[in-house]
Length: 200
Image 1 (cartoon, helix red, strand yellow):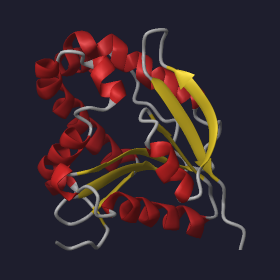
Image 2 (image 1 turned 135 degrees about the horizontal axis):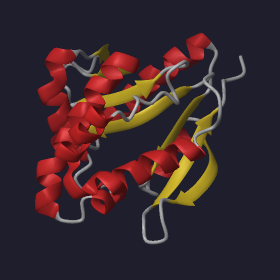
Image 3 (image 1 turned 90 degrees about the vertical axis):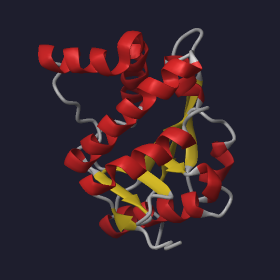
């Protein structure tokens, strides 16, 4: 397996979607949006494929050439950017997500509310490793490649996770916990973390 971290493109959509869908199949936020496992198996890959292409347009996608690991980033200038929710866009999201559209919108709105203000930061939106390659350090390897770009540009990095066990991993990369919040009264908890610009 080639562990080189590269910028992925449109031709990697299938493999990247498969990796992220498998990696997030038991993610607390995804399970809250799609409580029924059979619906999640059908709908979640459509959402992730859309997110992949959205980050090709407005951010960057880093991973291994074989998409064993995939990370979605928003660089400065696009951190808080959202496509206008026009009637055609709303129809597209309803077709994509079905009845989960309201919970998906709630998650997205709450994430935006708890992200640090401003655009002078790199935002790690999603990171996932193919299940058969987990435990080999690939996730940290890919995330550090994105952090190197943030460091070179002189910007901090920010992320959120709905998996508490990830907090320690991100701490080991220099992230600091700045906020803990629930999506809704019955929804999952999120941990928002920031990695300051390293002092040289």
